[in-house]
Length: 453
Image 1 (spheres, rainbow, N blue to C red):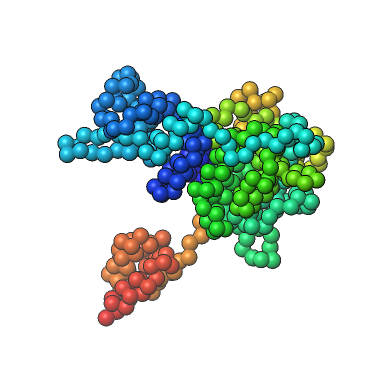
Image 2: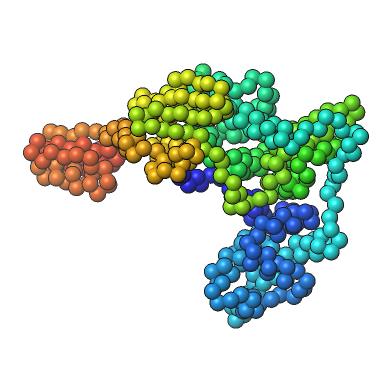
């Protein structure tokens, strides 16, 4: 699968980008300090715990003595990560020898958390108050359904559930990067980045959405550090337990409503109280993508005759396949289609590349064909690439044609001038004609005027 640059690996990448003042404010929360500690590489965790009760600075030479000679590379990675998160500060003395010290705010609050433990701002509601709490299986099904409905709305699909109420402000945040609308009269179209987004697994998609949500938080009057702190606190809640909405601030209530649109929490209303129930999507927020070892189940089978069978009940899967193939019919658990020249041309014109399509088919291959090599027939992958190359054989560049030069010296001087500016596209020495890029038209006009003088 092609590398997608737009997704952050975890919250810690966002935390590292915060200004020092906001980061110190974030480290005042002991649960944030624990989340930071859990996210660190093993050697970095060792350094934090060994330095936790040391008040003074520690020299770089002493830290290097804590690892074996073959662990030098891991040592550098650990130190760099700690400095990025400003958990560790580095200073140089007059002899340019480095010393390290833990962030005082982080150190103090982590000490308290380890020594005395921590209490979340809210406790689960008693069972005699809450009624009809969903089972963990029902909660997982709800999260998947809500997430797919959100993605269907995101790509402006006609198959999206009309009853799903997703706030327009949230949709605008994500559509800004994933959809492109040239005219108000036309529906928005999926961009190349949008198709890359659909190729990601759920955990990667979630991180991209959360990152965009945090990046745009200040536009809605929400402090970035407060939002990150609340989201990380949410990851310490218990999946399936009910938490009182009245324990939240006004800003946090709005955040919870947005998270419910994404399937991270489920909102329920009782006779007197209302509560939210975290799903696995919410409680896994503080886990790095690198820690996610579960691979999604494949569902696509592609045959040598370009026929495609997708064993899925998901409307979202059908809409993704419709982007580059012709869907012929859909049964309750089977989507049948074909990869055609016309369907691929439509995908290429939208900015989708052949490599993205091939990677998607390979990554989502049904288990019966996933073990085969290749998982997608070679004649199919080769033809997809050939059909893409057909569209890229000719490139269009705005240009100007110059002929009827008064002399060969002027013609050759004009060729040299255009070549020097990198604007010469074609020349015919016999008929004294040249074609130059339109972008150097003004310079070419001034040069020819001087030649006449």
